[in-house]
Structure formats: structure tokens, C-alpha cells
Image (cartoon, rainbow, N blue to C red):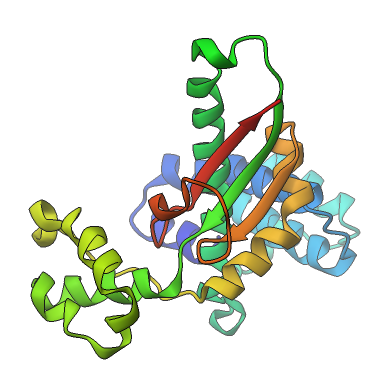
Length: 237
């Protein structure tokens, strides 16, 4: 957040910086609490950084915040906070984004499936989130690099899924030049992150949720999962 807001301020993009610092940060703090966050030190440090960044834009509000945080100095005389690059974990950031995107996708899926005649007036029993197998990510990134489906299918690590891989890769045949590499997150790590976030996911969707791997699920939608977009199976009562 500090890094992004600093970039906007350096370019004098005041409106963008204000949105990033104030509105986006408030939403992130709410999400932290919704996910069970309770670390007072983390919250204190977060609020101090946000207050320091608000000072040039909302000086009076920032001074009041600074005082409420127990500070006795003037926030206007304090330095702009520096981003600690060592504290940034790109894998965790990607997993958090992954979870939020999946919640949004699930909401849209609920909206669409609830309009189907067979589902009208029915309640959702559960939502199954199906995480794609690791080979899909490797195959996808290899296609980005080689721009050749045949070369990707020659990879030894795809020998057990050659037929599946051919079908999977064919879906990208018309858009190879527009593809870009994606982070190679291990499916076990993704599943673990989603399982940990299940109470949060269920609170957002208002129903029971489960997380399964493509290779072990019995869902008929299993093969639809993409490396960066899980398949979502909504089961009605």
C-alpha cells in the first residue's frame, strides 16, 4: 500500500493516491478483521502509516488520527513512511487476490445459476471450489514461452496427462500472443490457503463451502479449473 501510494504521489496523481490511501486501506483493514486478524501491533503500524500518508491530503483529519493513536508530535512534521520491501511476500499477495477473485466469481455464478428454472426457489447446499492441478500451470507457462502446443506436449512431465493437456492447451490456441506468464503457485499451497480462509469465504457467500483438488474431486466440473481461476460447483438442495 505504501509503495503504490508513493508512486501516485511522485506523479502528483492526488486523486488516485487519496483513493489508494483512504478508501482502499479502510477496505483492507475491514477484510483483515473479517479474516480473524487480531494483532494489535500490526493494526497500530498500519494505522500510523495510513495517517502519515493522509497528512498531505487531509491535514486536519490526519492530526486528529495521530493524536488518537497516542502520538504527541505533529504528524505534519513526521516523514512519509517507507515501504519495507522485505515484508512483501508476492506469493501470499497472489493467494489473497486469488481468494477475493474466486469470491467474486462465485457470487456471479450464484446469481446466474439461481435463475435456471431447475434451481428456482431452492437453497444452496454447498459450493465446491476446485483447485486446478499443478501440471496446468506448467503447461500454460510453457505455452507462453514456446507459442507451440506440440512442443509443450513433448514435455516429459506431461506424459501422464498428454490427452488432457492437448485439450486444455487447445483452448488457448487463438490467443497465444496475448498470453502472459502466471505465478507458479503449488496447488497444495493454494488449497491450504483456501481452507484457512473458508470461514471468511462462507461469510461472504452466505453458504457452506468446500475446497478440493482437481485430481481428487468427484465434481463433474473438475476439468474446467484454470491455473488462476478455480472451477466453482454450486450444489442446490
